[in-house]
Length: 273
View (cartoon, rainbow, N blue to C red):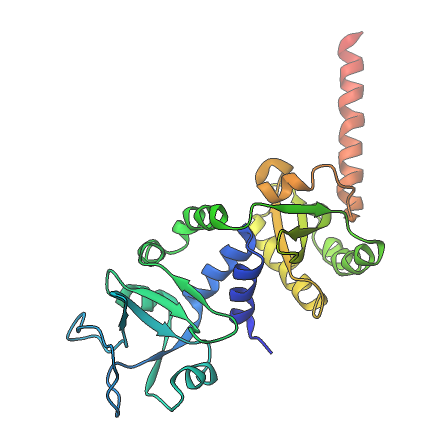
């Protein structure tokens, strides 16, 4: 059973999208990981030279590349080391600040869900969330470009609409929700869910509410990518949904828009007289 951070790693690697990659970086910076200490009871081979006399990070050299192995759990560390090791629990944010300039970070190097961060990524992550747009754009360039978009099956639509309808009732700023499935060249399938919102509330607030609802409601189903914006051109993911019928619509928003249209029409007729 994967924890939330492991799930984010898996999605970023197996179903790369702007939402999945951004979520991975967000959780990486916040999550405390199991980081082996440099000083161990038993000597360790292939240690890199001390990056600093104040550092106790285990940094290993292989093929002239310095790598800091980190783990999402003690079990993952034990699976890699084959014996108990001394370790500290360090967040990704602190780890980036302490990492030697040329070192990479390898998350779960021998696990089923692992990921590497290059020295370039680490240098940008030191800036925090301000670097995410550049990091996401770079990662998407490297991902599989051959993706087929398909409409949802009726049973998929019913399941997702049942999750989204209560959220719409609580959030009048949501205008409508859209969905489809993406199939990569490697036949990996995932949902693409798009949410259009008014500009009254920051989209990050809505993103969190909808994401949590989908994550809980789609347990055992396909992974999903969530895109939130005020219009279809706000992101490449939303643009894919431009010609799809909405899964659910906020009736309050629709009524308000219809009322506004009528007012505009009346004003137009008045001026035309």
